[in-house]
Length: 449
Image: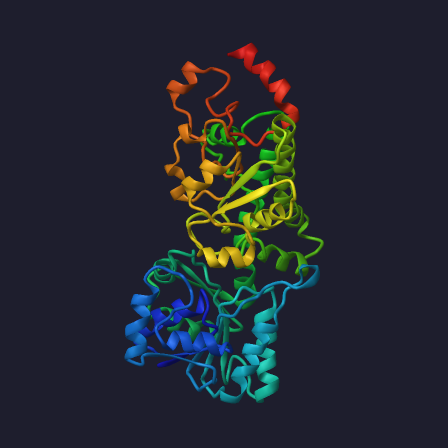
């Protein structure tokens, strides 16, 4: 196995192509996007990932890696194309099947086809059957088919491609063994062999478990807010239990995996996935709850001040310290707020170029300090590290709606001794509690201060 064809040069395909080329493979990068191919061949990696430019450039120059829109012969084909969902949350497998069909003219005896794309259970066998029908060869004997789902984190892709454990699922034993020959060249993590169907389900279960855990945290937040408690405090103190480890709530779930993959299981197992469906519903509703809370405080501000407020949205990406906007709940929230006539909206997203932000939302993308100075209400959506440089003095007189725990500080034993009932965060201006609770909270504050 010397020549590798990576099909799809995005967040997974391009780094995989780079790592494979660095470990001695001759790599062809195939993509249907001619502009993307041209940029990559001119040392522009297209994706934003640490180290990618520095590692890509010498490989292109030495021709160990070449991008092309023309499918070519290879010993191993890695399918790493997107798998979004379409109407009614059904998996869109058109990219996977298009890539599979593209292999047909060049597939030869002994070749290996590995699908890394996240796919519904049973898809690998469908692709194997398609190749059999189109080529007349026998899958698992004349050529080999396997599924090895990616498990990398944006920002750490190169490290995790090498050091994470991998699950390799073949349509038969021979396919498992052939696929393993590729990954053992560069993966230092453990390689676990199973069948293709199990490998498909493992990846979906991994991400669905995260979705359920986040949904529980968001339910805790909803319950806590409804009675004037700080959910970040509730979760912090619950996690003091030696066998409890809750996640923190957020403004929703985004990204290309966790917000999408549970639907693949729900589609395949509708009767056995009630919990997953409930979790998806909870997390999909969270942005709408955030918007409703912001609107409530906007009306409160207008009633008290006789004018519409300036609202600053902190963060637009789907998670902290990345520039990835895919399926971002923060972006959805900002887009909704931008349409409100009673809000003058400012945006602060330091990880995305201003031109990109303005193309998505026609509102100013301002610096952190300028935005805070101008804002009446600050809505914390993403826990970017750079936002932590704000001190509390700069926030005086402003309403802070913190949906990501940006300003929550874990309590110490000293805090507990000095303030037995109301921790420092619970009744400050940093809270997304509904204004209707204000009178009740003030009563409690007077009683227990």
